[in-house]
Length: 279
Image (cartoon, rainbow, N blue to C red; front, side, top):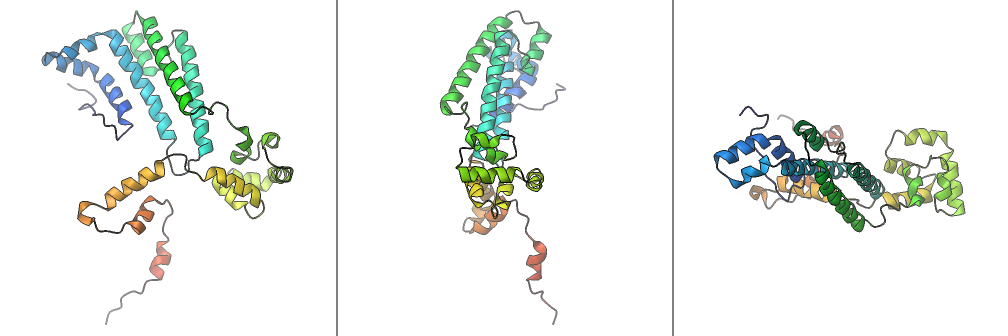
Protein backbone atom coordinates (compact mmCIF):
# COMPACT_ATOMS: atom_id res chain seq x y z
CA UNK A 1 0.00 0.00 0.00
CA UNK A 2 3.06 2.27 -0.08
CA UNK A 3 3.13 2.59 3.72
CA UNK A 4 6.22 3.44 5.71
CA UNK A 5 5.90 0.19 7.71
CA UNK A 6 5.62 -3.30 6.30
CA UNK A 7 3.82 -5.04 9.18
CA UNK A 8 2.19 -4.58 12.56
CA UNK A 9 4.01 -5.35 15.81
CA UNK A 10 2.99 -8.10 18.22
CA UNK A 11 2.74 -7.54 21.97
CA UNK A 12 4.55 -9.75 24.47
CA UNK A 13 4.44 -9.38 28.25
CA UNK A 14 8.15 -10.25 28.53
CA UNK A 15 9.23 -7.24 26.48
CA UNK A 16 7.59 -4.44 28.42
CA UNK A 17 8.38 -1.77 25.80
CA UNK A 18 6.28 -3.54 23.17
CA UNK A 19 2.96 -2.30 24.55
CA UNK A 20 3.74 1.31 23.70
CA UNK A 21 5.31 0.43 20.35
CA UNK A 22 2.36 -1.63 19.08
CA UNK A 23 -0.06 1.19 19.91
CA UNK A 24 2.05 3.69 17.97
CA UNK A 25 2.36 1.32 15.02
CA UNK A 26 -1.38 0.54 15.01
CA UNK A 27 -2.24 4.24 15.02
CA UNK A 28 0.19 4.96 12.18
CA UNK A 29 -1.28 2.10 10.11
CA UNK A 30 -4.90 2.70 11.10
CA UNK A 31 -6.06 3.43 7.53
CA UNK A 32 -4.33 0.34 6.12
CA UNK A 33 -5.70 -1.83 8.94
CA UNK A 34 -9.16 -0.40 8.35
CA UNK A 35 -9.00 -1.32 4.65
CA UNK A 36 -7.80 -4.82 5.48
CA UNK A 37 -10.59 -5.38 8.02
CA UNK A 38 -13.16 -4.14 5.49
CA UNK A 39 -11.88 -6.64 2.93
CA UNK A 40 -12.10 -9.39 5.54
CA UNK A 41 -15.61 -8.18 6.50
CA UNK A 42 -14.55 -7.96 10.13
CA UNK A 43 -16.73 -6.27 12.74
CA UNK A 44 -13.61 -4.55 14.08
CA UNK A 45 -13.49 -2.32 10.99
CA UNK A 46 -16.23 -0.17 12.52
CA UNK A 47 -13.88 0.82 15.36
CA UNK A 48 -11.60 2.70 12.96
CA UNK A 49 -14.63 4.65 11.70
CA UNK A 50 -15.38 5.80 15.25
CA UNK A 51 -13.51 9.05 15.98
CA UNK A 52 -13.98 8.61 19.73
CA UNK A 53 -12.25 5.19 19.62
CA UNK A 54 -9.40 6.46 17.42
CA UNK A 55 -8.88 9.38 19.83
CA UNK A 56 -8.57 6.93 22.71
CA UNK A 57 -6.06 4.92 20.67
CA UNK A 58 -4.01 8.07 19.98
CA UNK A 59 -4.04 8.98 23.68
CA UNK A 60 -2.93 5.49 24.73
CA UNK A 61 -0.11 5.62 22.17
CA UNK A 62 1.05 8.90 23.72
CA UNK A 63 0.78 7.93 27.39
CA UNK A 64 2.51 4.57 26.88
CA UNK A 65 5.24 6.37 24.93
CA UNK A 66 5.81 8.60 27.95
CA UNK A 67 5.84 5.56 30.26
CA UNK A 68 8.38 3.89 27.99
CA UNK A 69 10.59 6.98 28.17
CA UNK A 70 10.39 6.85 31.97
CA UNK A 71 11.26 3.14 32.04
CA UNK A 72 14.23 3.61 29.70
CA UNK A 73 15.57 6.55 31.72
CA UNK A 74 15.59 4.34 34.83
CA UNK A 75 17.71 1.62 33.23
CA UNK A 76 21.49 1.48 33.10
CA UNK A 77 24.58 0.33 34.97
CA UNK A 78 25.10 3.41 37.12
CA UNK A 79 21.62 4.08 38.45
CA UNK A 80 21.07 4.59 42.16
CA UNK A 81 18.08 4.90 44.45
CA UNK A 82 18.42 8.66 44.87
CA UNK A 83 18.35 9.46 41.13
CA UNK A 84 15.53 6.97 40.48
CA UNK A 85 13.42 8.56 43.21
CA UNK A 86 13.96 11.95 41.59
CA UNK A 87 12.85 10.65 38.18
CA UNK A 88 9.72 9.03 39.60
CA UNK A 89 8.88 12.19 41.54
CA UNK A 90 9.32 14.24 38.35
CA UNK A 91 6.98 11.92 36.42
CA UNK A 92 4.25 12.21 39.05
CA UNK A 93 4.56 16.00 38.91
CA UNK A 94 4.29 15.78 35.11
CA UNK A 95 1.07 13.79 35.54
CA UNK A 96 -0.33 16.60 37.68
CA UNK A 97 0.68 19.13 35.01
CA UNK A 98 -0.99 17.04 32.27
CA UNK A 99 -4.12 16.84 34.42
CA UNK A 100 -4.30 20.62 34.65
CA UNK A 101 -3.93 20.93 30.87
CA UNK A 102 -6.65 18.34 30.20
CA UNK A 103 -8.98 20.03 32.69
CA UNK A 104 -8.82 23.06 30.39
CA UNK A 105 -9.72 20.75 27.46
CA UNK A 106 -6.22 21.03 26.03
CA UNK A 107 -4.41 17.94 24.71
CA UNK A 108 -1.26 19.74 23.51
CA UNK A 109 0.88 17.59 25.85
CA UNK A 110 -0.13 14.50 23.84
CA UNK A 111 1.26 15.15 20.34
CA UNK A 112 -0.35 12.19 18.54
CA UNK A 113 -3.80 12.97 19.89
CA UNK A 114 -3.33 16.71 19.43
CA UNK A 115 -2.44 16.33 15.73
CA UNK A 116 -5.30 13.92 15.09
CA UNK A 117 -7.78 16.23 16.83
CA UNK A 118 -6.63 19.18 14.70
CA UNK A 119 -6.66 17.24 11.43
CA UNK A 120 -10.04 15.58 12.07
CA UNK A 121 -11.78 18.56 13.74
CA UNK A 122 -13.12 16.48 16.63
CA UNK A 123 -16.47 17.73 17.95
CA UNK A 124 -16.64 15.76 21.21
CA UNK A 125 -13.15 16.62 22.53
CA UNK A 126 -14.67 17.47 25.91
CA UNK A 127 -15.85 13.88 26.32
CA UNK A 128 -12.38 12.58 25.38
CA UNK A 129 -10.78 14.95 27.89
CA UNK A 130 -13.09 13.66 30.64
CA UNK A 131 -11.95 10.11 29.88
CA UNK A 132 -8.27 11.16 29.83
CA UNK A 133 -8.64 13.07 33.08
CA UNK A 134 -10.10 10.01 34.79
CA UNK A 135 -7.28 7.79 33.52
CA UNK A 136 -4.50 10.23 34.50
CA UNK A 137 -6.00 10.61 37.97
CA UNK A 138 -6.04 6.84 38.48
CA UNK A 139 -2.51 6.50 37.11
CA UNK A 140 -1.22 9.19 39.48
CA UNK A 141 -3.00 7.66 42.48
CA UNK A 142 -1.65 4.22 41.59
CA UNK A 143 1.94 5.46 41.40
CA UNK A 144 1.59 7.35 44.69
CA UNK A 145 0.21 4.19 46.33
CA UNK A 146 3.29 2.25 45.17
CA UNK A 147 5.67 5.03 46.31
CA UNK A 148 3.86 6.75 49.22
CA UNK A 149 6.88 8.80 50.33
CA UNK A 150 8.03 9.79 46.84
CA UNK A 151 6.48 13.27 46.94
CA UNK A 152 7.97 14.03 50.36
CA UNK A 153 11.57 13.72 49.28
CA UNK A 154 14.15 13.38 52.04
CA UNK A 155 16.34 16.47 51.66
CA UNK A 156 18.84 15.16 54.21
CA UNK A 157 20.62 13.24 51.42
CA UNK A 158 20.92 16.10 48.94
CA UNK A 159 24.55 16.61 49.95
CA UNK A 160 25.36 13.14 48.58
CA UNK A 161 24.23 14.03 45.07
CA UNK A 162 25.92 17.43 45.15
CA UNK A 163 27.92 18.53 48.22
CA UNK A 164 28.70 21.90 46.58
CA UNK A 165 25.14 23.27 46.51
CA UNK A 166 24.74 26.42 48.57
CA UNK A 167 23.34 25.86 52.10
CA UNK A 168 23.34 22.08 51.58
CA UNK A 169 24.63 21.65 55.14
CA UNK A 170 21.48 23.20 56.65
CA UNK A 171 19.42 20.07 55.91
CA UNK A 172 22.13 17.41 55.87
CA UNK A 173 21.05 15.67 59.09
CA UNK A 174 24.71 14.99 59.95
CA UNK A 175 26.44 15.31 63.29
CA UNK A 176 28.31 18.50 64.11
CA UNK A 177 31.70 16.95 63.33
CA UNK A 178 30.57 15.56 59.96
CA UNK A 179 28.85 18.84 59.10
CA UNK A 180 32.16 20.62 59.67
CA UNK A 181 33.86 18.09 57.39
CA UNK A 182 31.17 18.66 54.77
CA UNK A 183 31.68 22.45 54.97
CA UNK A 184 35.42 21.92 54.51
CA UNK A 185 34.82 19.65 51.51
CA UNK A 186 32.29 22.03 49.95
CA UNK A 187 34.78 24.90 50.22
CA UNK A 188 37.51 23.02 48.36
CA UNK A 189 37.62 24.48 44.83
CA UNK A 190 39.83 21.65 43.50
CA UNK A 191 37.31 19.02 44.65
CA UNK A 192 34.48 21.03 43.12
CA UNK A 193 36.22 20.97 39.74
CA UNK A 194 36.84 17.23 40.11
CA UNK A 195 33.15 16.67 40.95
CA UNK A 196 32.17 18.19 37.60
CA UNK A 197 34.23 15.65 35.64
CA UNK A 198 33.41 12.34 37.37
CA UNK A 199 30.31 10.44 38.43
CA UNK A 200 28.91 10.88 41.94
CA UNK A 201 30.07 7.40 42.97
CA UNK A 202 33.59 7.97 41.62
CA UNK A 203 33.82 11.28 43.46
CA UNK A 204 32.96 9.82 46.85
CA UNK A 205 35.38 6.93 46.31
CA UNK A 206 38.20 9.34 45.44
CA UNK A 207 37.70 11.47 48.58
CA UNK A 208 37.49 8.45 50.89
CA UNK A 209 41.07 8.90 52.06
CA UNK A 210 40.46 12.45 53.32
CA UNK A 211 36.75 12.27 54.22
CA UNK A 212 36.28 8.62 55.15
CA UNK A 213 33.07 8.89 57.19
CA UNK A 214 31.30 11.12 54.67
CA UNK A 215 32.35 8.78 51.85
CA UNK A 216 31.04 5.70 53.67
CA UNK A 217 27.67 7.34 54.36
CA UNK A 218 27.39 8.45 50.73
CA UNK A 219 28.33 5.05 49.30
CA UNK A 220 25.86 3.27 51.60
CA UNK A 221 23.12 5.30 49.85
CA UNK A 222 24.54 4.93 46.33
CA UNK A 223 25.48 1.25 46.30
CA UNK A 224 22.07 -0.50 46.73
CA UNK A 225 20.53 -1.58 43.41
CA UNK A 226 17.81 0.82 42.37
CA UNK A 227 16.32 -1.55 39.79
CA UNK A 228 16.59 -5.11 38.46
CA UNK A 229 18.50 -3.93 35.38
CA UNK A 230 21.79 -5.64 36.28
CA UNK A 231 20.02 -8.94 36.94
CA UNK A 232 18.17 -8.76 33.63
CA UNK A 233 21.37 -7.95 31.73
CA UNK A 234 23.12 -10.91 33.36
CA UNK A 235 20.30 -13.31 32.50
CA UNK A 236 20.26 -12.08 28.89
CA UNK A 237 24.03 -12.51 28.60
CA UNK A 238 23.88 -15.99 30.12
CA UNK A 239 21.14 -17.09 27.70
CA UNK A 240 23.39 -16.07 24.79
CA UNK A 241 26.53 -17.73 26.18
CA UNK A 242 25.05 -20.94 27.62
CA UNK A 243 23.02 -22.38 24.75
CA UNK A 244 21.69 -25.93 24.40
CA UNK A 245 24.91 -26.79 22.54
CA UNK A 246 27.04 -25.59 25.48
CA UNK A 247 24.83 -26.55 28.41
CA UNK A 248 27.75 -27.93 30.49
CA UNK A 249 29.79 -24.75 30.15
CA UNK A 250 30.80 -22.95 33.34
CA UNK A 251 29.85 -19.38 32.50
CA UNK A 252 31.15 -17.53 35.57
CA UNK A 253 34.26 -15.97 34.00
CA UNK A 254 32.60 -15.38 30.63
CA UNK A 255 29.62 -13.75 32.31
CA UNK A 256 31.82 -11.32 34.25
CA UNK A 257 33.42 -10.15 31.00
CA UNK A 258 30.05 -9.95 29.20
CA UNK A 259 28.30 -7.72 31.75
CA UNK A 260 31.26 -5.60 32.87
CA UNK A 261 31.99 -2.28 31.19
CA UNK A 262 35.66 -2.49 32.17
CA UNK A 263 37.82 -3.00 29.09
CA UNK A 264 40.31 -5.89 29.45
CA UNK A 265 44.00 -4.90 29.28
CA UNK A 266 44.84 -7.15 26.36
CA UNK A 267 48.47 -5.96 26.16
CA UNK A 268 49.14 -7.01 29.74
CA UNK A 269 47.35 -10.33 29.26
CA UNK A 270 49.30 -11.14 26.10
CA UNK A 271 52.60 -10.08 27.68
CA UNK A 272 52.18 -12.79 30.32
CA UNK A 273 51.70 -15.51 27.71
CA UNK A 274 54.65 -17.45 26.37
CA UNK A 275 54.62 -17.45 22.57
CA UNK A 276 55.18 -20.79 20.88
CA UNK A 277 58.55 -20.67 19.12
CA UNK A 278 59.43 -22.75 16.10
CA UNK A 279 61.71 -25.79 16.58
